[in-house]
Length: 232
Image (cartoon, rainbow, N blue to C red; front, side, top):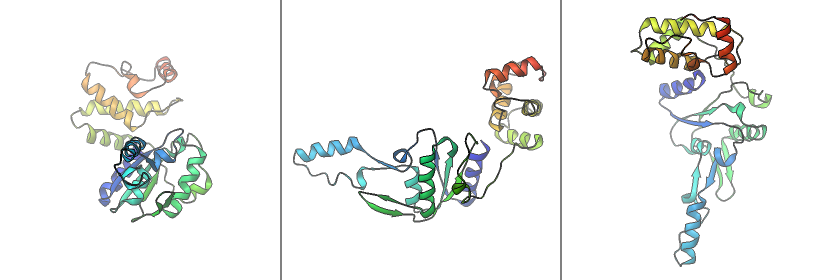
């Protein structure tokens, strides 16, 4: 959550438009850069067979712009968030490296398209795999650690002003305890907010009863309950 919020904050502070590309396993050029509207092209082809000229099939009117092309062609300042690049494969990472080196792309049917305004690019990674050195060399690296309990409490208050201070304090303390345990997946700030929201809506519920809001792996929940590290 924190990494994505950085991009949102920069876009808001600079007045730029935020464009987000969410990476995932198997993502390719057609999902990230551009594709053709094959359904409309087929309709145009049938219309042409009936004597109606609907223009070139591979023209702008049939082009589907994906986030990367949208960022390159934008006539206004853009913050391009490439979220969770580590989820993509090596081939896509190499393609992205080439694209961001020149901020230009060649579409065979349309020619080369260069960026009007070079976007400010933010890449995020959860370290599910190591990124290649060539990509990292072109980045300013910044590690976002968990906030201090005091700062995390302020974040929760900002997001959930209706939740009582005592509830926020209890959740922040519990999350801090969980992060000190050996877990498969430690709770992030997003889980802290969700947990505080849940306890705010269920004032009689205990931390243990709502533990599934913060932990999403069964083994982690069993381990925490067996250790008895949380109070009510």
